[in-house]
Amino acid sequence: MFAPQARVISRGQTAEKAVIQIHVSVPTRAASKIAEWCAASMPSKVYGVNLGSWLVLESWMLPQEWLNMGGQSCSDCSTCIADEFSFAEAFPDTVDAIFKTHWETWFNQTDVSTLKNLGINTVRIPLGYWIVEQLVNRQTEFYPRGGLEQLIRGLEQLHAAGIVAILDHHALPGVQTPNQMFTGHCTSDVEFYTSPNYLRALTWAGVMTALSHLHPAFAPVFAIEAVNEPIMDAAQTPGYGAYQENFVTVVRGVEAAVGVKTQGLDSPQTTANASQAILDFASAQSSIRFNSDVKTAMGNTANILAQIASDGSTQFNLRGSGHGQTSLVTNFMDVNWQNDNPPNPAAAAWGPQAYDNHLYYVFGGVAAADPEDYMVSICNLGRVQADAALGDSPLWFGEWGLPTQFDATDMFLQEWADAQKLAYSKGAGWIFWNFKVEHSELAGNLSREWSYIDGVEFGYLTKDPSTVHNTNVCAPFVTSS
Image (cartoon, rainbow, N blue to C red; front, top):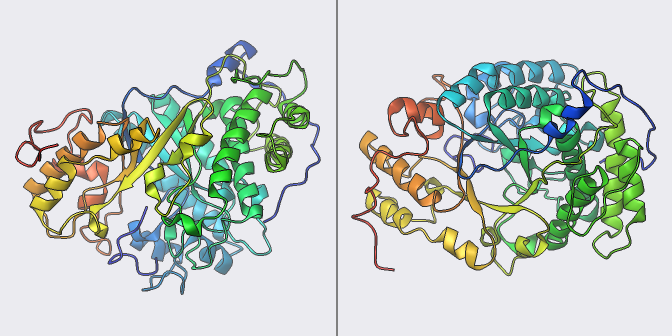
């Protein structure tokens, strides 16, 4: 997401292709239960929140904690310790322990229980590529280690609460958008849109796909999002259309290799472990879709999967099977996110696919900065229909919030919340940014408009996310079609 500018004071290494042959003992759950570890079903209507600043930290949302951790605040986030990259570079010996404390306190069982009590059925989990630690070039890239263990812990807690999850590739190798904390490295040097970094991102997708079908903790995962908020000008994202197609092929190829029924692909009949099965399956493919990048990414996935399975903190059954499991939903920012003749991700669809749009009025460019224009705009929003006309359906709104460009009254924020929920529910649903924001003197009143939990407490958002205070809130603002 884009951090509010007034608040933002500063706003690799390819795995070896050789596969490690390793057998990990079957977990305590019986093999007959393996089919239950499948990707979760997508809700009929998404009512969700983002788990922002958990596994991709954005210091603007927790300014006091960030200073307590040892970070800094500055007007240009590229010039001080304002993101994960600069922090890890500055504190190489203590970064892992410091972030472990943050991960365990920012999102934990208390938060899961609160979200369950509020009726939330979905979370979108922003992740950096560095959660797959084998993808990081430690000579030039600096990030904390241990995030995968925390993701597993959180997914287990979410699953117990009956909440499903989207794994959102929020921060891409090489950085996908300039000068944003959400990329993990606030820099103007954007290098994601290059062959080496596309390959690393494809490998990330392969690993997340395999874990979603083989690791029991990943049971609540139903979708993987390819890229959070790429540059809006398609002229600046060369190769992005090919990456979309390759992303889907990697996901489907890995699924087929581990036994998930995939249209057009025959799953192998093998007793080999998943790592070997993925490698063998990729080598056997000869279609145009399985190009050299896809095959290399699948080979890298196989190698990394074996390494993760051998890690004492993340053991799982490498001989598990995806037979009988549900295909993951591949997820992209919608075609209308970009301008200047962008590629349409609908062209890459193969199996279940959904689309994401983000809408923040507070940054301008959507409506005039006054309550009436805001309401006229949202009450006549046509994004769901515009996307559907181009094949980008179902569409959910993966980020939105209550912030405005003016001093909003409590009454307006309640109407603003109702109107946005009604507009976004015309599609597949919505996911609020963020689940919470720090309460501190330094954070000021930030949580009033950015925290879902506080929004419910203040009465702006209803305790039942499927309802609104006033179903006719838009009646005075609807214009003729």
